[in-house]
Length: 351
Ligand code: KG4
Ligand code: ZN
Image 1 (tube, rainbow, N blue to C red):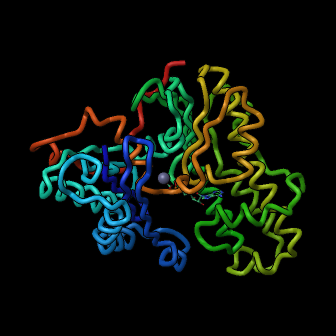
Image 2 (image 1 turned 180 degrees about the vertical axis):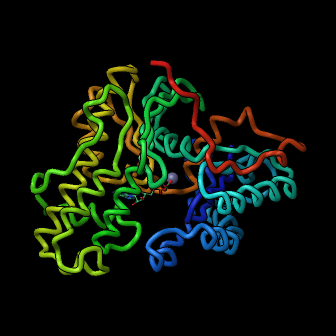
């Protein structure tokens, strides 16, 4: 069963064809990074306009790469159209959702609205032959940092989340202080490789609290204070002006603080919820230090998102949609779906 999936929640325009929730037949991602680099972050209005320009060619390429057409619902056709309903930037979401609705009407296909965060978690599950619920899901991205208990397909309970910045946002903001290009996560990760993670002691907030919440805004402030005495503080070229070793030490110490906080709370959340495995999804799931530390410290297996599906893409939406195919919408109900910029993944857990 082929599902055509569309994802447009932020600054990536993406489409994919996925078979039976496991085999990715095509995965096209058009990134706006070069445009947003100029402003040092995503300008929502600009992102939505670019989504509009790119969406149709991206969908056409996903169909061509997968060598499928619209006709029929079998091997060479499309059974349903999946699309991200939220959360995300409303203007960007609307472009993907309205495109999916229009295609569903024109090509007479069912529509499967998908939560973007569920997509990040399902990206960890594509290779699983059998599902062993419950899983503890960690969504660690630029917009979200959440622990969720996944009790069944598309059945999530919120266990904890960040009180302020998301982990990816912390990477991006610290990158901005250092004058690194947006998004700074991959860059900081690269620079930190030769650094000493104990050179600076940056705070790990909320670890003394008996909950599964996190906070990263104090960490960003601590990095800003560390940089305060440096030449050209906050200037565009700070990363180039700092001695290489010092830059590597700051990056390694910062990255380690983020990873320590995430892993410490993950260990506690596993003990409290008893999952069969932990799922690590979202853009920051591409981070090597996080992948390694989580795998070493957890008492249960970790199912890591394959790195190529960690940052935003539509394959993850197609995988998630397959496990929701019985809820596919048809007829007029397809057109009642609207974009929800703050769509929640699930109810709050009672632990
Ligand atoms: O999931 P994603 O593509 O978009 C959202 O849904 O937010 O995540 C993007 C975030 C950015 O903040 C980016 O800096 C971060 O993921 N990121 C990383 C790495 N690769 C991407 N952070 C740390 N290390 C990485 N290797
Ligand atoms: Zn995402």
